[in-house]
Amino acid sequence: MSAPGVDHDAPFGRLARLRWRFLSLLATIGRATRAQMRFTLMFVGVAWGVVCESVRPHSWRRTTRLEFRRCVREIVAGGLLSVLVTAVLAGIGVVSQTVYWLGFAGLAQMTGSILVSVLVRDVAPILVGIILLGRNGMLSTAELGLLNINGQIRGILGVGLDPFTLLLLPRAVAFMLGGFTLGIIFSVTTLVMGYMASRVTGAINSSVWSFFTDVVSSMGAIDFVLIPVKFVLVGFFVGTGSCLTGLMAAPQDDVSSLLPVAFTRGITMVMVVTILFSLSL
Image (cartoon, rainbow, N blue to C red; front, side, top):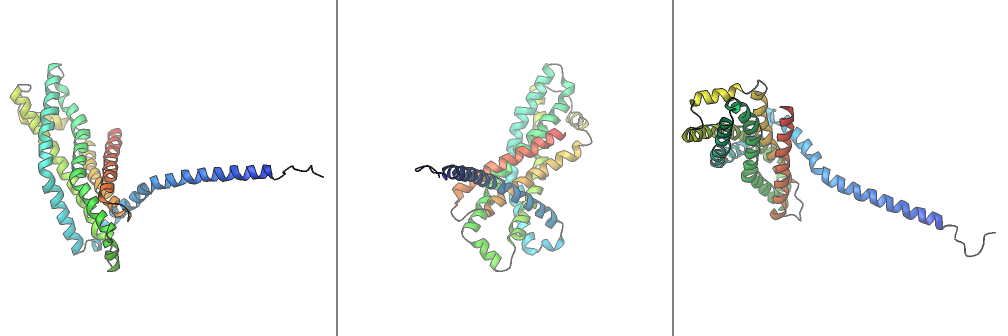
């Protein structure tokens, strides 16, 4: 017989409590991981959907084409002035100083390769991505977020329309086209302004054609493919991420809570694309 007052179930009670605490810890970690990975997984699915649907003619109905044209005008025409101003400042502050100090150090023959490596490959995509994010990406997040919060997305679904095809697809493709266009304009304008500033200060004496020949000859065959693709992907990631952030808005969210999230995600995507392509180049 057992002694009175001895609780033989105590070890089992402690084991149950330890098991419950362990499972609670796993549940907490799982909830946090799922919350953090939810956007990433949805982004992968939406990005693949955009790629697949963009090549199907039936996806480009009249309403989708009209939305695409409107977005292209807003992105390219609206962001052109910001890109030109930024390119002028970058040309004067980056290109001219690079030309001056390389000439001062007797390394003028490396001007083209350094400008391609630093400016065209890395600086240009980052600055263009930030401009796209700040001027158009945040606007798309606010617009789609308000549509979702106010229940208008459910209304669109109720009348048989697909919000993905109507709202997200044309914006994502427009951001891709805008990223490429603004990226090329930024790169050319920066080099032209850098040459003009260097010519005025006497840091360079060659003609503009010789300067651009030096820059272009410093680019490898792969650069002519990967650099434009980099601009396209920066626009694609910024546009898709911004639109998805708005469409994922919860009923308790508002614009003031959505915009910081969209900005953080957009900057992260721009940096990820830039770093991955820099490693590949």
